[in-house]
Each structure stands twice: as C-alpha cells, then as structure tokens.
Length: 248
Image (cartoon, rainbow, N blue to C red; front, side, top):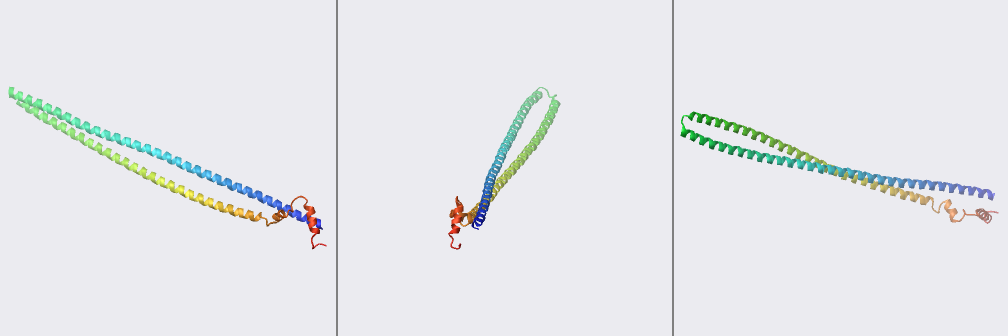
C-alpha cells in the first residue's frame, strides 16, 4: 500500500517537473522572441530615420544647386541688360557725333557753295531736305530700337519676377517638408516610447507570474525545500510513512 502511494506521488512529481520544464522552455522562447522583435524594431526605426535624413540631405543639396543656378542666370541677365544699355548709349553718342560732324561739313559746304555760286541754291535746298529726311529716318529707327529694347527689358524683368516667385514657392515647400519631417519623427518617437513602456510593463507582469508560479509555495518548491527530490527518496518516503502517528 505504501509503495503504491509512493509510486503515485512520484509519478505526480515527475509530471509536475515535466510541466514545469515545458513551461520554462516556452517562457524562454517567448522572451527570446520578444528580445528579437525589439532589436529588429529598433534597427528598422534607425534605418528608416537614416533613410529620411539621406533624402533630406539630397533635397537640400539639389535646392542649393538650383538656387545657385538661378542666381547665376539672374546675374547673367543683369550683366546683359547693363551691357545692352551701355551699348545703346555708346551707339547713340556715336550717331550723334557723326551727325554733328556731318552737319558741320554740310554747313561748310553750303557756305562755300553760297560763296562761290548762288546757282547751286537749289542743290543746297535739296540737300537740306535730304538731310532732314535722313535725320527723321534715323530718329524713327532709333525710337523703334528703343521701344524694342524697353520691351525686352520688361520681358527680362517679368521673367526674373517669375523665377523669384518660383524660388519663394520652392523655399516654402522646403520649409513645409522640413516641418513635416520633424513632426513625423516626433510622432514615431512617441509611438516607439509607448511601445517600449508597454513592453516593460508586460515583461514585469510576466516576471511576476513566473516568480509566483515557480516560487517556494508550489509542490515542486516544497519538494525541493524539504529535499524530497534527491537520491534515496524511496527510503525517506518509507521512513516518513512508517513513523507517521496516523499509521498503525
């Protein structure tokens, strides 16, 4: 009878030990899985942050190159306008000088003609009319050239204003994108902190359950505390049952 009871108790003890080992193995696997998941999540968040920062740096570089090109183009246009204005002024002075020289020589020629022969008066009148027509012709072409030049300057100014508006639009877009990246990074950091907080609470809760299940109050802990799971347990069980006051 004592042997049967001992065998039953020993079988129960073995079953409990098996359950305990299986549960401990599952617990270790689950803890390793959680650690792997945290490491992978951290690496993914870091890689994603580096990826966003690389794209941000590329965008800033391209924007700086675009701004430099726009500034270079504006400087070239301004230089062209300045050179055109100087050229127009020099051309006007050149025409005026030649016109003055031509008028001077013409007056000398008229005086000589008047002096030498009054018969050539008609020729002088015709020459004067021709000179006047030529002057009007030159003045008309000069006005047309000035008009086209003013239109060209207005077009250049309009194009510069359009480019300036485009640069301002790109700058505003860049500022909005920077603010969005900062807000999105803060949002990801907040969710990552919340996840770590819940993970720590879960690990603490799991450790409390483990300490409660594997503490000295369960049957395995009692057997270990009273040294009932070592070698020679059979003789000690027989001795306990023989010395019990409830047994005959």
